[in-house]
Length: 104
Image (cartoon, rainbow, N blue to C red; front, side, top):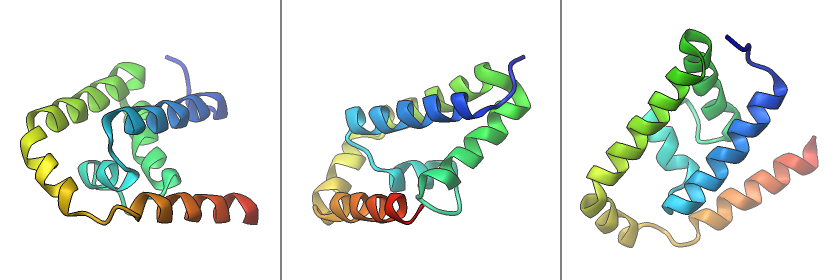
């Protein structure tokens, strides 16, 4: 079994960002379903790293597939929630990420 490393973390991060964009979801949505402490990517990655450590790539893929299934099954409920959410929340999240990148 391959160990967690920076390359895997980078690839998972890119995968998550693309997946969230394709699904019309936010990091906040992913945080809720993973029960992470924050909607920041490092907190989300930490949860996924634990899953990877306990069962490798198959376990991580299983977790992500489970999330995909939950989102697909709750499509009607999610659509009504998205209509009432703040349309600028994505911009706030992007601004926070830019500020975080600039401070590093």
